[in-house]
Image (cartoon, rainbow, N blue to C red; front, side):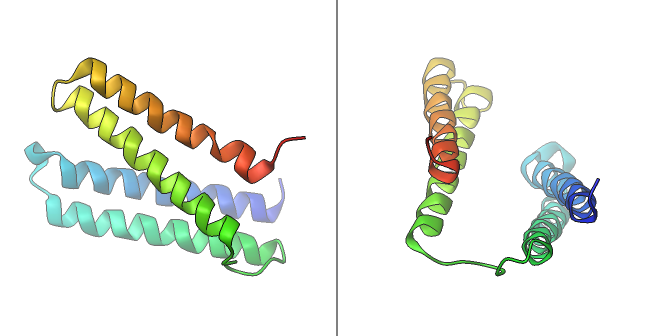
Length: 122
């Protein structure tokens, strides 16, 4: 395993776990830890962002590239994630099973569209 892959593995696992735990703490009222959850979630998100910057530096690429494709890809990813999350909330919290499944599938399709957008079709 290359050094950059190992560092990416450790940082993405740590950041992902902290972000997920923070979201659980913030969103589950039974835990009563919203403020602490927000703090832990932000720490996880910061670790993930730092991981991206470190990985790009180790690959010899510029830290962040702003162009139309990068902005569009980011917006598509954010849109797909939010729609999938709303679908999950509809099924699990609001009790709207069939509409929630349909909305969730729309979010999944939007996220799947990221593959040809990023990798391209050959």
